[in-house]
Length: 112
Image 1 (spheres, rainbow, N blue to C red):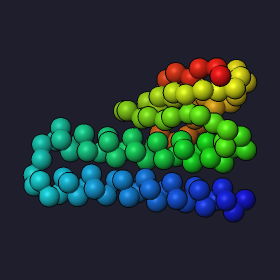
Image 2 (tube, rainbow, N blue to C red):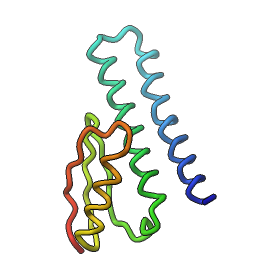
Image 3 (tube, rainbow, N blue to C red):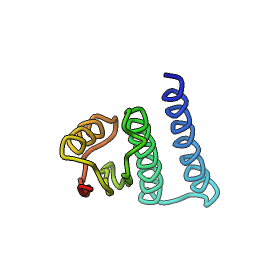
Image 4 (cartoon, rainbow, N blue to C red):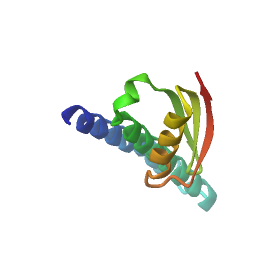
């Protein structure tokens, strides 16, 4: 579907756009420690994972009715918000677990 492909492209571009300032910040600050460099890379990777998860959710037919927030820290995705029923919760968890880069999913979803 054209809309889904467009949404996926927008999110991919957004993820790349988010990563550029982090990369440039390291260059502008000059030589950073290995720890600082690793932190910059980790934040950038988390932003990319969040964008991938959002793209995976957007292509779902019921995405318009989702009331879910996504946060990624150290490749662990935390979901907060509301789902209609247990079947939808399981489906979301399965979709998100399959996204490239996701190490774990923390389910903080509540039934509406």
